[in-house]
Length: 494
Image (cartoon, rainbow, N blue to C red; front, top):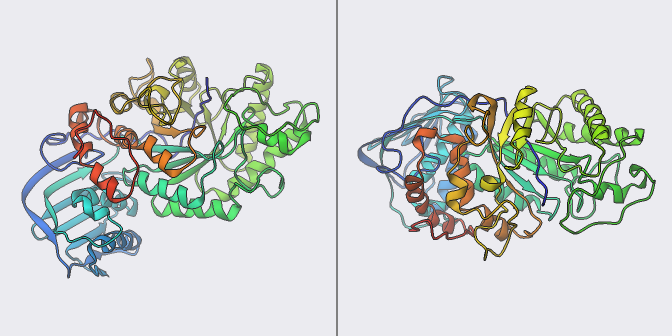
């Protein structure tokens, strides 16, 4: 059955919030993820043509400018950003009571006040503010309005510190602009990690200057990759690069004969089978190669983690696999990163649980001190078909309708693995059958927002009935953004 791996990021499992929401699913606005605490208040606020956006600090100014840019395009208003309180005020308070990403948001007839301890927290709150406005606010061209928001008082922070998406650009390549759009859509649901699967049997998608034959025409130059990292960082999304080893390496074995034990270059591969390729563990050139790759990728990546895959290495002898991972761990350490991998890997700071048939691997990772990112394929893999008739995707882990992707909890999916063992969640999207942005979006939406909510919202705040009602209101928002999405019959679309 096709591949899967393991990844992670951020800093370690975040705290679950202690606040219980007021009527999280029934009364009030259709917010995804549902906030930790939401109270509907009297009155409403209407954004007028002479409104301003106020920001008190230099730290929050870029977030204010981005909010102004988003609102200008759909309202047609000037919305100047000023360094004083205004109709919409963003405040970076320095107060860490709600953590790095927490925020408060109050809407009254007199205006909107969004406060957080950091600019990152303000940015997360801005995503909530966007959802409080009418769906037409997401339009790329001016709309007539009115731009009215009902009164609310929100206090919010995430359950887990890692809330990721993984995009496979190795099976099919996606351009910098396509990746940016995927980042924008995911960040609007408070996703904060982009795990890029950069290499596999079918392709090597990042320039390595010390091994120039690895990357072909469909790949990122190092400047391209820097641009993705920069763009993501502006949206408080951390990029985690994956260089899959020692298996899933046919593209490298085809480019450089010396990486093969027999010294013969492999033929390029375009199929979907897995587990047939392996670096030559006994050759020193393998570790010189790995050191060069890790050195260059680490220098381009400001985040703390570097993912070396480690999954489905069926063609690597188990003893050789252990030997390889030990050397790989040393190399990653040398270049100042923390090793991540899929659940098969025998070392690393973070392991990603993906195979629902192998819960023992998740338990073993915890036993050796690793944190887990939870991506059970029968719930979180966005490339699984919705139904038998879905045009795209695979079904090796089963059919995954919207309810299947939402009705699970990271702290209960593997017996013996609890909240304290978990760094967060991730929604991987493998692209064996996906070659266009429309196909990516069709498979990700509407399932990705639900997985984002699992990572952000308190477990007690979530229910399928409440979620499906809230999600229904997001169809017009996606239509305004020209998102191609699956109109699941489980959702009462508006």
